[in-house]
Length: 166
Image 1 (cartoon, rainbow, N blue to C red):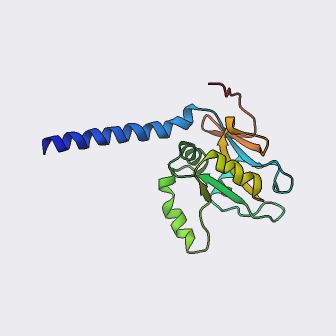
Image 2: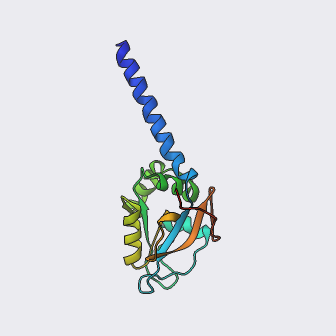
Image 3: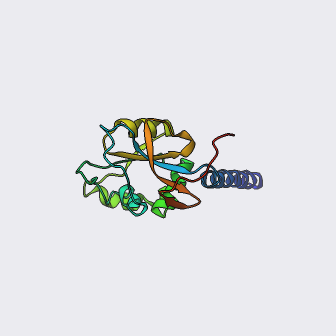
């Protein structure tokens, strides 16, 4: 029984260390870029306030100004960038948001679409009319354009200084 306790304690410590690494990883890396498509046929917005960003991802704001449905996309719930985005923009961790989404589900509102990788976010945003997402600023390419930046736990319209070299 004593050795089982030692193994369980070691496993718990390893899990905690791994979880702490995931939570702080995004905070110590490059800024996040909140993105929309750069294609005029799928991009329906040119600017967004930091205040409205949370409403978009909580799905309290569901249509862009011209009437196009907003299509927010998240990284999967365990992704370090999703955790960072959720803490800064939504004020809670993805694991703490399930009660909110469960309550809205019965009113016909589902959570934002979720994908597994930043490349999937880039693809989805670039081809989906009204889509908005977020990626590491160093992943930006000509398929998308940034509207907002998330850096040092704040959302801003000002592009922060960052270096993408290793």
